[in-house]
Length: 326
Image 1 (cartoon, rainbow, N blue to C red):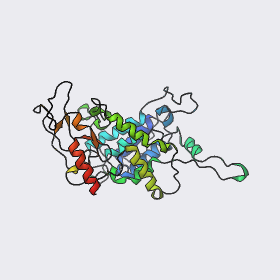
Image 2: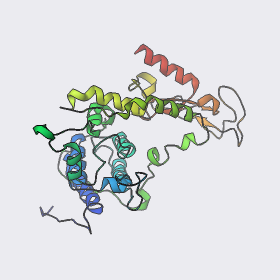
Image 3: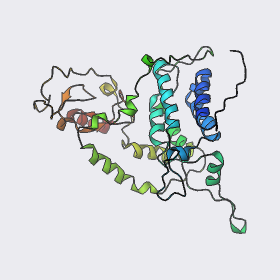
Image 4: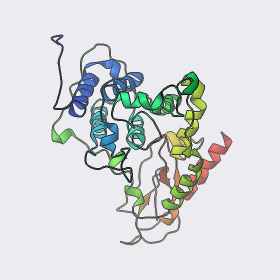
């Protein structure tokens, strides 16, 4: 409000400084709450200012096994969790949704994308642009892919449909009391529904087998638009949902879950529930089934546009049939 410049600097300037400045700018300036503005914010405050992504992820060159835990810390992930808290309190103030945060959480340190693999912008540029070779050969550019190429190529998945552009430039003032903080269940509890059944391992092993040919990185040369198909293909393979991005009719509607206390047996096979035979809600129809009748995983837009959710066999067949017709 006083239009004053502020200098923020901790002991080194690459951890807490990036957290404080980026969160402050996110709350003060509506531009950084837009889809493109949030990308600019991360590139400027985290990558360009030299957050030590390599050390904080534990993936360091020159180490015997490739891992070093001395300086490993989820600093960037803590920032994303703080952004999620703001999304919960101000659902209409951000142009992007939590799917973008989940995607960054899961793939920021996977080694697929060059953005978060180095400790400084200098290390990044040194990797991207090799020195000139012999006989005045041009600098060698490695075959790499930017995470933003995938994000921008799948923009519709990360846009908040309830976003309302601000009518004035007033900052956001989130409540930081403990009673207002929520557990990010979509991230910290993402494996909760799978702990009581091991059938998902077969699907995971199949997905890993489909990714073996991606060990050689894709070349990214030119604009994002020219590489949209490549980026989109990588995104589909990483998330294992092929072309099942959008669904219409009742799959987009939020369903009402059946009361698990009043249901004593599986809706499909009528097997009685017990301590060893647990209840599971179908995320599509909301009815309660046993583990054997809810082993299918499908994309349900009312829950997530990119993460498969548990559903019963009948709903899975209905979804597959609607996808085939579309």
